[in-house]
Length: 363
Image (cartoon, rainbow, N blue to C red):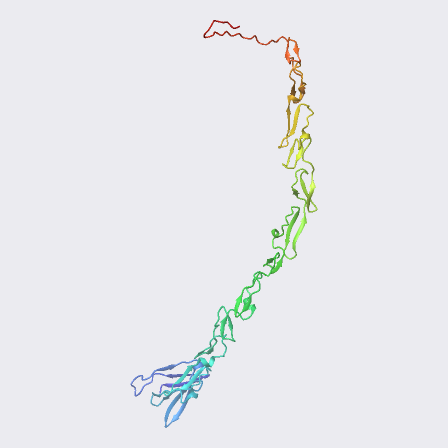
């Protein structure tokens, strides 16, 4: 008859081909090569001398009947009742329709596990229940209230930063913290502690005679040095650090006869007038504001009060120098403070002529 039904390891290859009725050529060509998962099992039946083949799937669902003797498809049914339609998928609603075809309708409700925070489960007609997805991406899911929130506990708010303090969860909302380190302590983020210092600059004690270093855990370390320093005093000479203080000095920087002037930080000739005494009796010795001595000759200090020995002068080095004879070649009158032989000028006579009256001569 040109029809074969082969059973091979639960795999039936039902080959209906080259089928003909009264030699009128092909009426039906059907080639089924199915995998074991969906293989049909051919079940031969005998009914009133006619040979039928009822084809069932592996779940024993009826797929149809074929009458071999007439070579035509008489009927094709999947089910007689709902039990024939069980597809093995827990989340489908399985029923047999009035047309004999199975209805396997996915019902998401069958997959619902009652939990909010793992998302909404759905039913796939082939693979069954599929897990839901996170309903709160980037936030916290609160199963108790079926809501997405910022936090449930304080730990949910921790941003991993030490120096901005401990964050808190209040009313499902994160509250920022505050600096955990009270002055004068500094916050060291790298090792999460409150410390005296973070860098060497934090340890600057203003003392030029110590080397200031920061130990992140133990705090500031100060080591004495022997660097050059300045105690602010000029007249004790150059300074050097000793035992943590600027206390080593080279001494008076000014060599005699110069004096050290602390006010102007220079070596000067004097600080008071007495420092300027030059042992010259006729000079006026003063100390100028710039620290230099002024020795000004004053001739009045050499005047002996006599006229006839001349005018004395003051030399800034030699002192008083005697004057010269004021009356060379003439006698000198000390009492009159003049040279003898010096006469008063001759009077000049003037003649007056009267305008009226007798002429007269006045001598």
